[in-house]
Length: 129
Image (tube, rainbow, N blue to C red; front, side):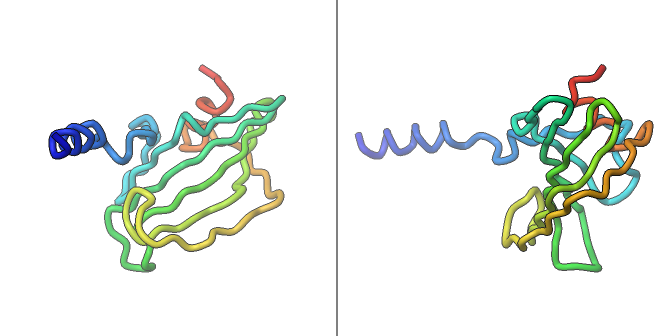
C-alpha cells in the first residue's frame, strides 16, 4: 500500500517545472538564440508602478558560463518607463542550476520602446491592452 501511495504522489507531482513562466508574445521575441518569459504570478501593482520577473533562457552561450537569467523589472505605468531592479544569473536553462547573486539598480529609468520586449511586459504588468 505504501508503494501505491508513493506512485500516486509522484504522478501528481510530475507536472512541468516551468509552469509559472509564460512566453512573451511571439512578435516580441528576439530573433536569436534566446526565449523570453514572464511570470504573471509575480506582477505587483502599487499606484502608478508595477513590477514583474522576466526569465531569459539562452539556447547556447559561448561567452559566459550562464544559460539563463531572471530580471526583476519595475514599470512606471503612466510614463511608459522601465528600470531593472535585479538580475540573477543561472548556470542552467530556465533559471536552474547554480545561481550568482545579481545586482541591484537604483534608478536608470528608460523609455518603453514600441514593439519591444519591454513594451509587451509593460502591457502585462500595467494591465494595458
